[in-house]
Length: 319
Image 1 (cartoon, helix red, strand yellow):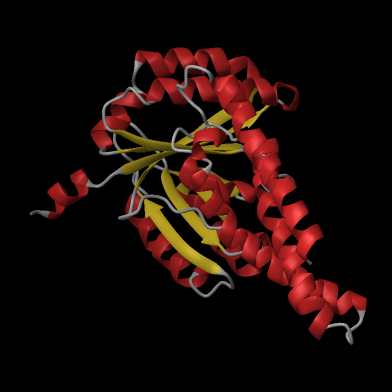
Image 2 (cartoon, rainbow, N blue to C red; image 1 turned 180 degrees about the vertical axis):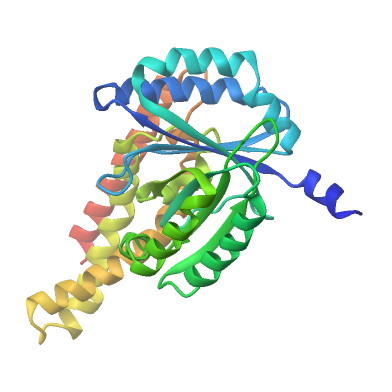
């Protein structure tokens, strides 16, 4: 199989970053949920994920839409249905959207804890020089602390005019340290004569990344449901740690130290167990298409409340 054919068969993701007026956030979330239902009927659509703002670092909404091929993604971008949806969202937005197409790896886009999407419009005739510069900055940033991945995408004729770079870091602090570093600023200044426009936007992920596998439509999950599932795992972890480890083996330590160690264990185990339990409650987290969604909401909440009560009774009676 030729390289061109192989590339054509790789899935692609549309990465959209947009700034929403603060007072219209709830309206935009509802608008995006409706858009999620619409896009699922398009040929080649695989999945959509939505990352709400996480101030102060990430102020934008980030939408990741994955398609089976570039042709499928282009069909959605140029569709009348999408244009109508965009027109309806215009009063909610500030400034322009950043829309980029990125070729996926085998598993598609896998967001790190924090990423920067950097868009560059190169002056005509300066493309070769810009590619030389890009290799230079790629070599420099490969040494940056916390870098987890780097993707570079050239323009797609008729779809995307910008060069796109995606940097993935393990922490916000490490990403910001690289973006503000004197070495990077010097390299960016070197590229100024080659570029027409240049800007970066940041996307971070928090609790939502635990639930990404049960949100195929990309609609935002209700915060109260996520909180209930986190508590469902956190309460027994904290209780059993205190009874089996904390009191018998750590009573000689200061309260501050023993609490800190307990928090490390609790956070680690909760992060491991929440995705597991979220998968079992996928029917409740997003009862999309269910004839009686309201009944599903109450049923799931009732089941979790019953589990709370059962745990409290068992711990009170036998410990």
